[in-house]
Length: 289
Image (cartoon, rainbow, N blue to C red):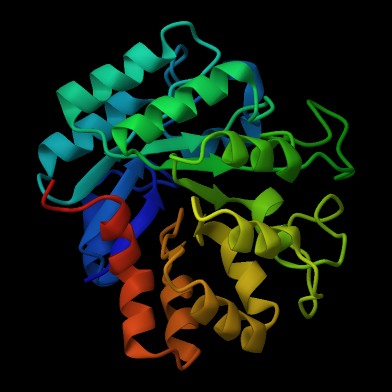
């Protein structure tokens, strides 16, 4: 069985029919289908073409689109929803989504706020009580050569606020995702200089230390960020995936098959591959619940 633990409705031109066809072509049985809700001034307008429908109040990827997919394709999607914790009704909105629509994941949280914000901590602790894992997107701000509308779009405030959130919410499972998380696999100090650092992994990566210290931290290997972090040093990647075989989830955040191709090239033991492809996802979100 293969579960894609990170994707979005209407993402990169994939409406429902094309999305389902892509899943079948890549032997994906189920997808965690995530919203992305944030204020209009917190997402890069260059994403507009990739986003499809945008809801002016709940965009850029409103939860309503996730619900629509699940209604039209029963059994193919596990719903994720992450309301902005700064909204006074955030916990009520998530609770309603859990009760009414069967939401099992809080994600994707992708906001220009520190993830140890008091309101975020309240939401995270609520997720811990409900046994709902939280997927967070981390991005640093650094010089991209652009000046308008912003040099870069940072999210989460970096690894340190995220670590404090993980510390403060030991009963909540967090899945780290995106360039600002995966760049910390290496101790080469490139995390705030390039979204996709190159070269062999240098010992001392903050992400490795956090995984060893916090049992409630897991990894979402989706997108170019997760794949780049692993592909930059294949021998290290094999060791990493064996050491953290219970903490890494196969995920795409896109529609190609590069993640599977790379995982299958590493010569990993069969039981490790089974955990990465679906076992760890089912441990966090049991399919029988």
